[in-house]
Image (tube, rainbow, N blue to C red; front, side):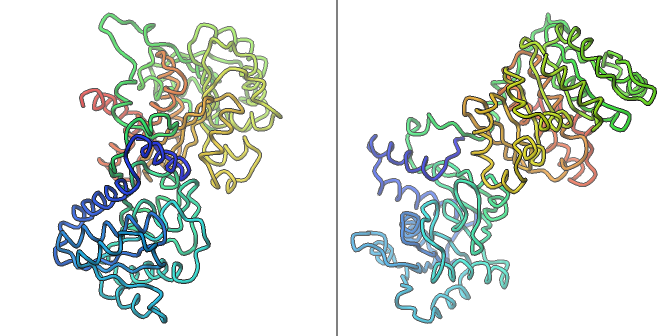
Length: 517
């Protein structure tokens, strides 16, 4: 499913118009689709009292057509015009002809009429601004939106619907005005908007439903941002054949683990194996190897020399480079720790790695890179970086708030500038390619907010890349399968007490379900 900015949606509607689908037809289609969704969600609307807050633009026009259709379905509908509409606008006339009671804010001097309608309604449809907000939210607009929040607090049973996007929420970056209400449902038109896939979007939009309004496929085919879905994931899975051997499915070499973070090495290697890699080798400290051998018997080991104190010896990079030439993917960073010895070893290896070996960089190795000016110029080939928001801030040399301000555009810009595939890990994860493609994995799961799940993801991506997937596809499919496995674990045991090792164990079942469906 394509995901758009406000500007892109206007371009899509313009292309639709050129292909013969006129603006009024889109508006009527939107009204019909929103009314049908509200009817479905509410279990019928006969006798229900619905207040539609109507803004000055196209969103308000969509709201008026929705009001007319809800009235036809048997609801008692009130339309409150927060601004005057054009005399040529058929919306108010049609609504009144259908029996919708239309109230104008211009006639409601003390806004007592608005207060009465809020007190008496069963549901509210926010059709004030949508994606076309280009003015300060004040006056009657601010009062109307704040009234939604006020009356929802007084009467939690009052359903709140947002048409296309909650008013006051930026469709591009998810920044929210203080007056932006929290909807129970957002019925978004044609294509979901970027802002819905942000922290504020999740907070304010409630359950998001995307409805078809008759936009031709040709009008959206060139959009570069879309949501990951099951059909794509199934088609992208690496193929398996019965006469294969372990060499058929690729080899992963992982530089991971330390005395303090033994489990990280175990989890990333387990993720790579469970994603289908034919062979996984852990390059690690001898003292760590002895611990892991009984936990991951399928993993092979490259023992690296260490100091008396159990630290990496940087000159081991020569051994790593020699061995890496026989592997498909080099995974680096999981649980290496903050020591200078580990940092020097990792950077010397990464900066000299053959371009024939795919590179996945996670965790501590990302922090090592952030300390090197223009580090991306030292790694000319594409590589997968898997930062969480804090690591992304360090890589960019900015604050976490600046990362969150417009993460879509930041990710797209940095992926192109660095020539890297970036997985920005969060409740809703984003993946960007150097070519400007962005994919969204919309699967928030509080149970995944536990130590080690990121190590598992890095391993899964490495395992898929080893089987021949291009780095961007490996990153996208890895994120998707990782979240599917996490969702399955949550269904079994809830979102408290999930462990990263539970996700590792669930991965083959998630892949099997994807194939079987």
